[in-house]
Image (cartoon, rainbow over all chains, first blue to last red; front, side, top):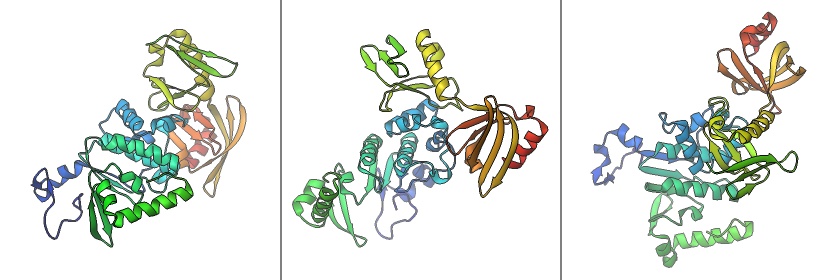
Length: 203
Length: 155
C-alpha cells in the first residue's frame, strides 16, 4: 500500500501532508526503495546489479554504496571483483551476500522512503550482524518501514505496529509495548527464550 | 600518501607497513579487473578487510611498492591463454574443452556458458572452468579455422 500497488478503501495516506494519490505515481515510486527477504538479482555482474539502483552512478559511487552495505570486502575476495557474474537470480552468491548487494543497490538509489521486508530473516548470526550494520547505514535520514518477525531488527524503530491476523493489535515504542506486557511482550519473551537455546543473542 | 613499504616477510607472505601501522598476510585485488583493468587496486589484510584502495596504482604508489604489487597480482591473476582449440563438446550442459595454451595442452570443463564465458570485446573471450581457473582467448580472429568453428558452435 505504501508503494501504491493498492490504495486505501478508507482514510488516506499522506506524504508530507499531501494525499499520495495527488502525487505523480512515477515520481512518487522513484522515492521508494525496497529491500526484500529474497532480493532479486539479475544475471549480470555485481556492479551492474548495484548500479540498477542508479544507472548514472560512477564506479566510485558503486564502491561507496557497497562499502556502506558491508559488501565491499566479500566482493574484493572474488577473482573478478565487481565484474563477477552473479548467475541467474544471483545463484552464485549466498543469501547474505545477495541481501547486501540489494542493500548497496538501495543505498545507491537513495530513496526518501525505505521498506525493509524481512530483510534479515533466513541468515546466520554473523551475516545478520553485517546486514544490520548495513541497514543502519541505509536507514539514516529516511522514513523506514521495517517488517520483521525477528524482533531484534525493530529495536530502534520510532513506532512499532503489531499485527495479528491482518489487524493492528498494538502500537507504540519498544519500551511502551514492553511495559504494556501484551502481544508484543509475549513475542519478545518467546523469541528471547528460543534465542537462548539456539544462541543467537537477545532480542 | 603516507609512507609505505610492501615486502615479503617471511618469504611468500606479503607484509605492508603504512605510516605507523603494519599488516601481515596482505592480499591484493583488482576491484574491477575486466571493466577497469589497471585501475582500482585494493590492499586487504589477512582477514580479508580492505586496508585501502588506489584508483591509479601505477601513478599513485611509490615505484618499489608498485613493483612488488605487480609481482603479487600477476601471481593472482594468472590466466591461461588459449592458442588453439583441439576439441570442444557439450553434453548435458557441461562443455569439455581440449585446448593448447601458452603453457601447453590442457583439458578443462565449463558449465553454463551463458555465465562462464564472458566476451570482454567482440573478439576477446574469457572462460571460467568448474574449478575457478580462467582461460583467455585474446583474439578469436587469429585462431585457426577449426578452432573458430568449434568456438562458434560451442559459445
